[in-house]
Image 1: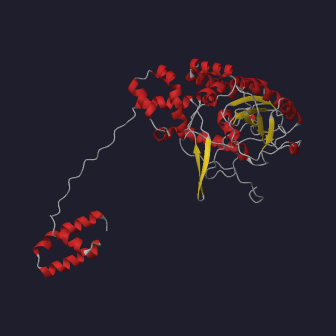
Image 2 (image 1 turned 60 degrees about the horizontal axis):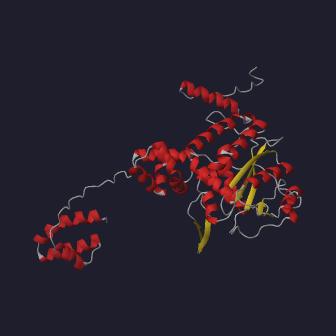
Image 3 (image 1 turned 30 degrees about the vertical axis):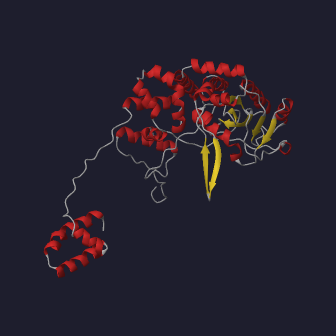
Length: 429
């Protein structure tokens, strides 16, 4: 019996119990204990106590809105300009972007305090409707190679490094639906300690082209290159890259075959820095190659390394069968590089001045314009297309016929069914 029912039953028998004889009281008391599950002494005290009175209902105090609509609109604008980071990273980038937020949105001091005080959990709640628009897809194609595989050691320890310059490297395919012929790949390099990322586009995955692009990125890094780890693809396991690393005293290791977790850092950057922006379209022209490199070497490099905080796994704690991962505080790659006290001082100082001068909102607008231009240069004939789902009665229709039929249904506003005519039989001719 619920509390409200017990209270109603107690009110119904209270006055009857007080006015009846001792013998009837004993019967009422037995029934009261049996129905409500009370002990006899407690029931006696309750029935001999003060009469039941309805307690006045407390007025429900609804909590007011802590964050104004203007603050939430500014938060959504920053989230969009920053490339839709998750709440913990968005919370960390707000102080970094605040000089430009203050200038662009003309924030008052109370509004600025609200924006800086919002928690990651509240950010998730407020941005939940917008997050449903994001889509996820799968990764692209590279094949393992065998040349010199046994001469390149497999990295068996984890990347618990305390020096910058130990990187992971990988290729991201822009082949669309067709892997034939030459098309563009994005070559990604990620530093383990600072999470610094450099990206360059190459035509095909020829060995000399990959080595040349890797050398360009090594010179652009604000720290010396000490070690490199790759997967087992033939674009990396070859004599050209081995000779390049030996000449420059770079430690060259590889992960285990078919174990993507061995290259978890670069696999994560493949999504955030390449696939999430470029999609799954096919790029196979020199103009697309030049446009991709123009974006990678300028605006995207500054946005991701100077203005985008990231988190790093600090340790794992096992309690019984459960493994809990603990992450450090979000920081930008530049801040991690400065905190390490390593790297090229001249390049670091130049990057610090760039962050003070470059407006991240303008940077985001330029990135968006260049992405639209890159999308126009894609080979859409060999790029993935959205599948139109089948409706009732459309089992025999082709994909193109279903698309035309659905478009006609949208125009007329009513469902249209179209079936292919049945093949004529000998009797019906």
